Image: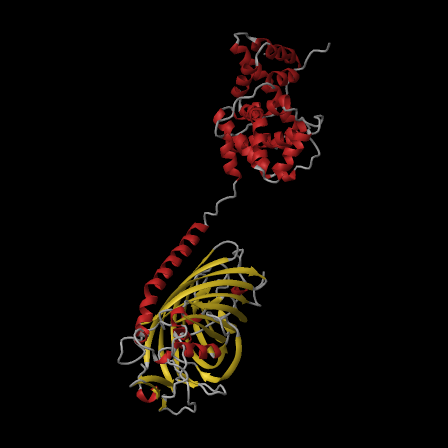
Length: 194
Length: 440
């Protein structure tokens, strides 16, 4: 799991969590203040626009606070919250976007280095912008695997598709991302890849 | 140094992306965390509030005029009903065996004389005065209750406390309160009702019912009349023998009902009663302590209330007996958590079948006991109208708490040749019912 190695919660977090479990609005507000920007960055990568991302963020926080009594202190609270936020985003995408996951059997090893070189030259905003331009199926897999650290198996369960499909979609997502980034900087890495 | 992977670079590059959330984000979350509004309750509470307002208006509007109508003779001089008990100028013209005192009652008894009491099974109820009606064919989870069996009989038991408004204007020198307790009302009904939930098909039902009632009237003397005769003596006597009653009622009912509507036609009568006196000396307002019971007696009429009493406590008064035939319609709305709100209205035809009581009437300054049966002063037939609502709360395990305010008015004077005897009553019933047959 992505957050398995994260340190346990701080004493302040534990105090806030317990207050939230008593439905303390002040503590809930504090958690929102601490994590809303960070989580908005996550949902924006999935949603692709800020209006939807803000809605998903609010929906995610409501779920967090309503189900906070289910948190058993057996991992970091931030990781627990993030999973809810991501699950909320995926549920939205599955509901509002038709995701076509085609099985592709290709050798992508040649492209790996070029893709890494490409994103190395880009700044954060450019990469985020490129991710939002990806088809939703690509962006979803890319976000889950490359950025959030879920395994292919976990993504397979989350999206209810075959693991091999996740793998191939991820490879196509990387290629597509590189193409978009290249176009943004007028560098034709696409020709080299293909 | 190993080269960073695509994933590591991507994660690193995007980790700092933290846009600013919308300004009203937290407000929306806080609003979303508030308990959900029970929108479906809106019409329920609206109707409940509207009914309270309507009934309250009717109570306020009609009650004072009723008092003035009923006992206009009490405003300028001592009425027969407030005559001193020690007066010896009472002449007995009737056949009663009592000899001395005139005592009092008040209009609280009207309801018991002309009301009818029908009670049926398992949360289908017509309560006191033919004015309170409730129907609840479903349990608190809106599931079909045991009532939705094909056919069955069931017994319910009810305890209720009924409070009548104080009739301060009734006798200018006295104040009255009229608490009463109806206890152990038992109904037995055989019903046919919809077999499946949601079926809006009327089925017929029929049943019998009976009830035991207790009533008391509490009297206090006003400050300005304290120490003045004859009021003080009258009050002293009342303290010794304030009035309470126990009675039994019976009747039957038939009709048809579905999950929300109920139309019933009944037949009810007033049975024998006996008096209970309430005594609480040296206090202006008497509490409802029941101290002794007297002999059996027919129920008495307010309009002709006068009772004779011997030292031994043998009360025989003006008594008459009516049979009422109520036609009632009720409509129920089911709320959440076992709350049911019911509106009801109806007419009742009343026919006097017996009139054997006596009254004390003022005649040339003295109070004369008269046999009103021979005078034929009472109307043999009259019609009364009633309306009210009830709120029932299913408490589970067969118990139901209810609140029933109601109002009732006769459409014709019950005393012939006068215009002052249209009676009117208001009641507020608060009670607890037990239905052994309810299943969860």
